[in-house]
Image (cartoon, rainbow, N blue to C red; front, side, top):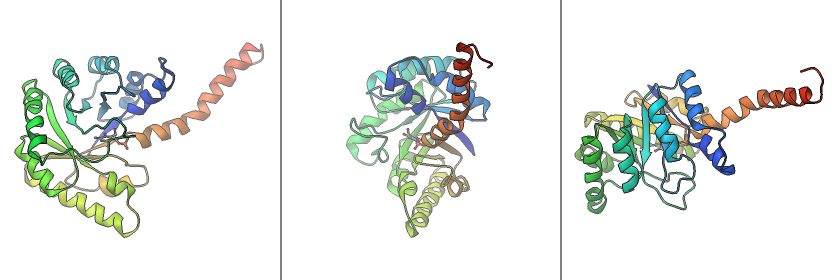
Length: 244
Ligand code: PXP
């Protein structure tokens, strides 16, 4: 199982002040040192978190593969073709959404005819392509027909499920992952996974990669807060002429 860390929310904090910290590029180094197998970033059309500068610097500095999430926005596809990250995951994007809601439409003719040229361009640039889809048989079939190397199964419904529904959603993911493998696709999964709910998904033998962001960055804020406060208290004591 490969663990890709999504560092978008480091940039979310930075953008809240339009300043230069925390820097997602530095965060990526720490994630790699901590054992991440890859780094995921989503360059959104509205640039609410990750910026083009981040993607450019990450492309230069990452030691692990970059998984660049993007919607079918021409200028962002151009950037991907220029920078050639290891992998692009195509995701849907709606301006008003808080986070990615639901998988990509890969089934309707209109959507597929928009996707096809984008996938050809990415593949011609030597980039591994993945589609973020719901764990749905038709979506898997359509993804295989589009010739991508991988699908990322949307685990959001599983993450939001309660009671008996949790098992039903897990079964859906397991079935979809098995179908993906039978179709020759690499199967990734992600969205809404937490320290509490990740174990059964990580145990699915047909899933080879997980993308986890919000929960990891949330935990980092809490596990790092005590040390951060201690560091500032030290600076303040020094400024007051006392012992550090
Ligand atoms: N996979 C995709 C396609 C996503 O859009 C996101 C969120 O940016 C994730 C995984 C990670 O989700 P979370 O931040 O909830 O772990």
